[in-house]
Every structure is written in C-alpha cells, then in structure tokens.
Length: 199
Image (cartoon, rainbow, N blue to C red; front, side):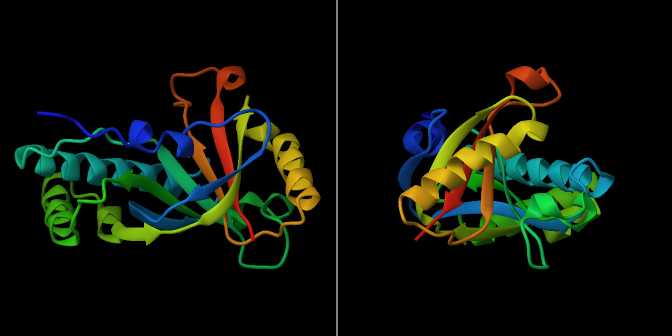
C-alpha cells in the first residue's frame, strides 16, 4: 500500500530558501484548532496535543481504507485582534490557528467520526474544537528562517523589504511551517518556513 506524503506532493510549499521568493499556494484541506495566548502557555501545548491526536486518528481511519498518508508538519497562522503587528503586542494577545494539512481525499464525515472516536478514547476536551477547514492563500512570499523563534523578526524584515520592493501588500495572516521539532532540535538548528499571502 502506497503512502501519500504531502511534503513531497507539494514540495514547493514545504521547501524554502534563505532569500524570499514568490509562490502560489493552492487551496488545501487542514485539520485546525484556534486559540489565543502565549505559545509557551498550556493552552497552546494542549491544542497542539489535540490536533496531533486528531491527525493520527484520521490517518488510522484512512489506513484501514488503504489510503494511508504521512502526518504532515505542524503549521500555524498568527494575528492580533487590535491594530498593529503581532510582535508589537504582548504574547498573551496573540491569536493563532494551528494546522496540519490533510490529503484532498479526506472527507468531513470520516474526520468527524475520527474526532468522536479520539474523544471517547483520550477524553481531551480540545478535540471538540478541532475541525476540517479549507485554506486558500494564493500568491504568497515564502522564506526559510534558520535559528530560534526569537530571532524571526530579522528574517521577517527581509521578507517585508522584498514585499515592499515588489510593490506588493499583505493579504492575509502570517503563516509558519515548523520543519523542526523543538523538543528534539537545538534552537540554533531550528528551521521554520515563514509565509505571507500578498496581493
């Protein structure tokens, strides 16, 4: 039985260089959970756990249907409810939507069945907040950030200068794709794709 690996199917979306580049991001299916607060806080950790639990339960359901797939990298979009740039406000005010991409053949009915089964088995309340969404970002600028999350502002400035230089404007939420597992990777060796939809 073959196993779909979306990072290979959509290689251009899951690889980036240290210099910004324009790409086109087509619509895709994601399991998602939304929250607000410090990414080092308990809610963020619990939401991540619920999302991965959902993703692996859905994977097992499709594996039984002989449509197995690799669980993709964790992603997240970020914004603030007030005016201003997210990095300029306290981390407690950051809003986020955590995402894990699903193959296009994943159906809402099986997702819901999987979420119900996972909740019965794991009793994680936040599983009730996980849903299947479609995200279509279109034209975007993408860049690879090397190093700890705390040093992202320098990379974001490079991306912002590129956007301005190309005569483009922001057109959606800041998007991050976490290529490295912070539990297993030294901060200096972390790799994160930063993406910004533009128009």
